[in-house]
Image (cartoon, rainbow, N blue to C red):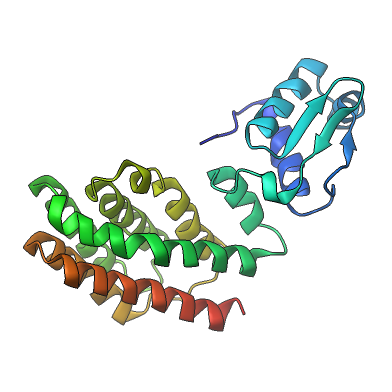
Length: 233
């Protein structure tokens, strides 16, 4: 997955990327690199580097004698963490959050069931530590601290599943969780029931109870969808 570089071309990306994903440049729009370089007051080489990153995300394609063309949304790399971040910052945040949360609901319960079968002792210990960290930050408006442990918890689940395809979704899930927090699509304190469910998932994985781990994780994702009904309808 792509992470834009820092520096001048990173600055260009942080303006141009969100503009494309927000629809300011509709599919088929032609971007002239010379004009963009002048607009952003950067060299052509910097502009070309920014375009290469956008191409790697499948947001644009370069054609000789045509220029840089914005690609249809259906062709975007929607799993790229930066694309997710840009889309969550746009007007279609509710739709993007719902789409990603439905993805989580399809993947994470199965991953948790697999984790109960395949997790190592170290992964079980890490999962428990993450769950306890969530408990410790679940009161007093400590959402940023809670987020750190929440992201780590779900990464462990995906990694411990033993499925490399699930494991690669760790960055996607991290962006969903971060987006909910940073765009205030969360209550001031996490739902106590959800916090308890995370602790119970850790216990089920440690006990090797795949059925219970999958069931409890499905409850977590269902609760996340219900929160969206309230906070981002």
